[in-house]
Length: 240
Image 1: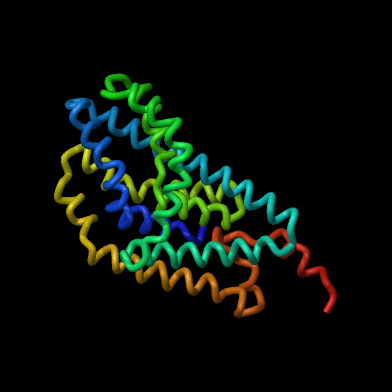
Image 2: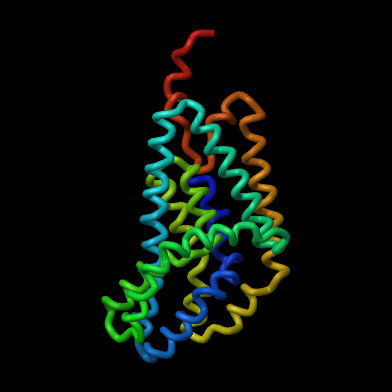
């Protein structure tokens, strides 16, 4: 099992207050246009989470390829994962919002996708709900992009896909809650106290990840996704 799955779930759950700033409008519009048809809401969110998962698998494959080409890549990716966890913790606690700068980069791609998504509204058909969700996974979001960087550091397609799946499932209560009228849950998720609590946990987890290679021994072989570098498989056959 991927060691970072619980942390990714927390990032999605308690970071979804930021997601509502971008996805809240589409969530409310989808809820209004799909009265009596909750299946459309489920398809939209299923497509959105599937998009995160597929992107996670892609990033994991890229990280794995880098690990095969460069011997130092596993340690570098491990450090990236720890730094991203600290950055996400600072972001969730609203102590440092530097991750939002990533959104400007993603905005270059989104400019070409957004006109197509507008043609899918108002959503009346299942295929349109799914297509909208798949495209909405590419919406510029610093939290999503930084979690994708964490998936890159996992350097394993399956583990990275599971990491992004956990993140996506964490965002589900807030985004679906807006569409289904769950305002009490949405208000709870927007509570700054819970975001600061999650931020502290993520900062601590990130610092622990950064400290693992410094501990020596087997700790150096466990990186962000809970997998070990390929070189570790032959370690037991090496000389003293």
